[in-house]
Amino acid sequence: MGRGRKAPEAPLPQREGIDPVRVRLPEGVWGTVGEHLAERYAGAVGAGRVRAMLREGRFVGADGRAAAADEPYAAGRYLWFHRDFPAETPVPFPMGIVHRDERIVVVDKPHFLATMPRGRHVTETALARLRRDLGLSRLQPAHRLDRLTAGLVLFVVRPEDRGAYQTLFRDRAVRKAYEAVAPYDPAVELPVTVRSRIEKERGVMAAREVPGEPNAESRIELLGHAGGLGRYRLVPVTGRTHQLRVHMNGLGLPILDDPVYPVVREDGPEDFTRPLRLLARTLEFTDPFTGDEVLFESRLALSGPS
Image (cartoon, rainbow, N blue to C red):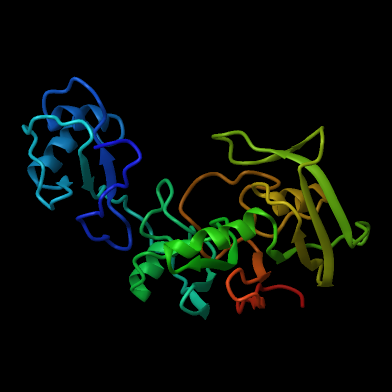
């Protein structure tokens, strides 16, 4: 099969809203399909499990026929399979539909639910849920919202439309506003625009502010306060990892029930009774297809002062 040629359509349907994995067999000296797959996935799955999956007919070619372990190896061939999904604790919160039309679906993602499959979160994700519940197998997110943050996420119905909406987020043409509940300190002068340099190392849970040219900017406003707590409006200009949480913590106002800032909480079972008090409240942009100015507002609410 020549380079650059489009891969054939997957012969396997989605399972629980998750696409099958596509594999293209590379150039090499393997004698059989089984030899290559056992070597390829020895670390991630285990050679023994790969051989069992081959016996179960889990690897399928473009013609829909199950591949046998002893089939002669053929570089360029495509195979598909479904991984074994990890055991996941169900996130016990519903996901509300804020808007739906022929191009986009805007939802209120609950706390603790990842936007899309990643790491140990696969079927318990907003994308998998929506594909299953709405019957929209080609649905894709236009952007991501942190797993611990609740609020608005925009999904695109048709793959051919996705690039236009992703470009809006990439070019910062989407105006976002968040709400947070955090300690109130009258000594912190607000509103304030925070500019700093944020870096996050791979494998380290917390991002940190370091000296250098700023790469992160947030505007922080106080909406109200009572009982030692404040309700804040947070407007990110940039989109660094954990930016709003880092900036609030840097002001001495760590967002309530944050398991990372100022101190990383010990890993353990999720405590669904203590969600991070951070909400993606609004999304506003010019629709790239209709030219209309649109504003979506979350229907969720954070407990705390009004």
